[in-house]
Length: 175
Image (tube, rainbow, N blue to C red):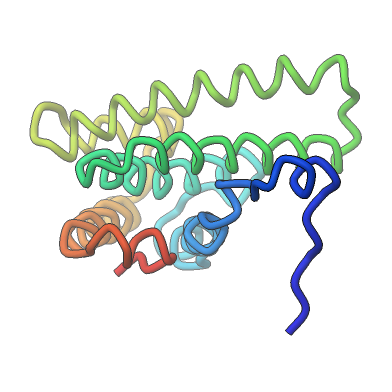
């Protein structure tokens, strides 16, 4: 099995990128957010914005769980991986350097707002239904069945995440 070679600076400084160890977790978050059931049974819009919103919903749960486990630094690194990925995605879409920063700023603002809303909802201080309608469906009303599917699946994910150890979660296990 071949491994990528460290960069010149990493060899010079003798350090690896600490975010690299979180790639399995990041890939698991993205894979979960791209599951077809969210879009087919859950009625989440199957658009770039809808996929972003769904990945952010899963990412928010994982970040909240990491913080509850005392893995604050890992939470920061996971967020940085998300930003790096979104930056790359925007560039692949042909968005230039000048505008990428503005898009990333809006995405980070959206992540922060959603993280606060989902944290409040998942800890019982807020309303998950309201948070989902506002942030995942962007105010559009999905069918009752679609909404129940998404709400139930996210609540089940939250319950499974609560059962995971720090090491299992960092290894990419989402329960």
